[in-house]
Structures are given as C-alpha cells and as structure tokens.
Length: 326
Image (cartoon, rainbow, N blue to C red; front, side):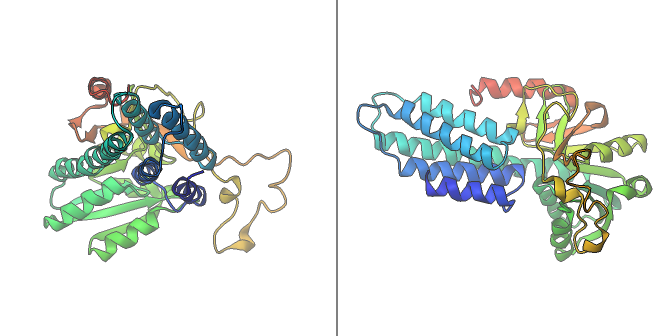
C-alpha cells in the first residue's frame, strides 16, 4: 500500500476530509504520488499493471468510506487516460502525461468550474435578498463570499441538522467575513422559510432524471421551499453528473455511524436510548444522503451554465462526447 493512499484513506475514515470536491482532489493527488513513484515490473505493460494498482487502491478507499459519484467519475477518467497511452511511449513520458492529465482535471473540472458557477450564481443575488442554505457546501460558500465582496446587501439563513452539524463551521467562516447570518435547525424550517427569497443548495451528484443526490435533509428543505414558492437553486459541477437514475434514497445510500443519532453532544445525561441501542428489536438508521425530486429544483447552476433539471441528460451526453467518462 502506497503511503499517500493510506494517509488519504485514514482521513476519509476519520472524517477529516469530507465534501465531494475535497475528497475527489485528495484522491487524485494521492494517485499522482502513486504514479510518480511507480515503476513497471519486468515483463508487464504499464497500462495494465498501473490500472490494476489503481483498482486495488480504489478498493481500499471504498473500505474506508464508500466512493462518491464525483470520485467514481474521476477514477473512470484516470483509467481511460491510462488505457489510451501509446505502447511506444516511454515510462517517464507516460508518468508525466498522466500527472499532467490529473492536474488538468482538478483545475478545469473542479477549480475553474467552481469559479464559473460563482460568476453565474452571483447574478441571481439582489440587494435585500434573504438567502437560505442548508449544511455546508463549498460552492455555496464561495458564492456568498463573492456576492459580499461585490458589495451586495443580503442576509443568510443557515439551516443545520444533527448529527454532523456541518453548518456551524460554515457559519463561523461567514460571520468572520462580516456577512449577516441567522442560524437555525431543520425543525424550524417551515417557520423560517417565509423570510427567504432564494434557496441555494449544494449537491453530491445530479442524476440523469434530474434528481439531486445531496446531504440528508436537503430534500426536506427543498420541499418546504417549493410549498412556499421560494426558488431553489442547486449549485453543482458538471463532473458530478451521472447517467444513473434513482427514485428514492433507500435503494442506494451511504450509512453513517448509527450511534451518532442516539447521542446528544455535550448532554450525556440526555441519552434516552442508553441500554436500548444494543437491543435486537431496535435498529438505528443514520442515512448520509437523500434524493431531491426534480420537481423541487428551479434551476441547476453548473459550469455549463444555468440549466433546468430536464437538461441534465444533455450535459451527460456532452461529457461522453469529451470521452471523460468512457
């Protein structure tokens, strides 16, 4: 096992690296280190042996934490680049080419894509707006900070939920920037929604039927926004789009630590399930993601522009044309 891969895997396991973009970048940078230190064994070809090594490292990452859709797309991209290396190319040239391809993917599909999304999204923010967001999305954070830098006057309502309470870290960063914020939990969503003028949400993936796969609770926020006629804008890079179709969050999901939902941080005396958690009659279910139906999505802001959920298959097709997923 390569040390860089082992280190990243442990970070996934401990939760030190979370979020679709951060996890994907960490994985690709670990693969860069693997390629840099790689040497082809005798009587083997680089493309086949390196692909086998990458596959074994992917299995290790999966054991640490199930892969996100974005990571799966990035792995497909890397394997396709390895497969397309000419047999006549020397090992040093092949390694340099692959490292350059990974840098290009990180820069173009993640970093530049986020900048394009921010430039599109800030045009939808007007003075006096109350912007509601849920959890912690790196893309939404960049949008809010950019709008504040442009001098737009707005207020942010940050909705959060247990057990992760990811929004608290985002709240600290926004307040430190001087942005006016309101913090509440998801149980108050129907009370606070009447104040919101727009809802900005991040996404782990967008599926080809227009459904949005995101942090659990996102669908609840979008449903309430839809009931209050508040536009829901989903910010998602195009490399997170996938041709898969999913109708609910039960058929495919990631399970978190079941005891995290039973314990209340800082209030050990309030552990009402103490003693019951080990019972055979009780199963604690801590889902990580949920599926937001396309009916609740007003617009998806991507690096391809601002599109309705019905245009997702077109973007998936365009990506195939670029041979990034094949």
